[in-house]
Image (cartoon, rainbow, N blue to C red; front, side, top):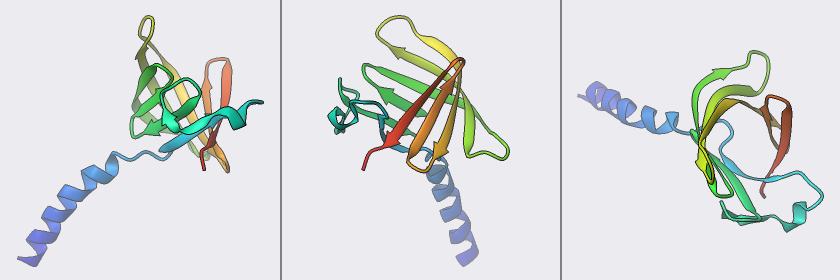
Length: 118
């Protein structure tokens, strides 16, 4: 009976843990106006950017991350990103690469540095 309970508990808990992503958290751009960013407000002008599981929320948009591929030898994951918000929806490849203070957001021809909110 104890084994059955343990197996059932594992089946319930594993999917919940699988929803968390390696880069989950609140971020702000690493720019000259860093002190102006409000890490308490998500998705608003001047507010934080949020990564939660398979979603990135920014100012007036949300993106879904799909088909993760870990990059061997790096603290990085490559995703297919689909975004909606103001304007037309779009899709592109995106790599998130963690560093000591946040995450690099890398797309074709662009690297953004997001710092973790304290």
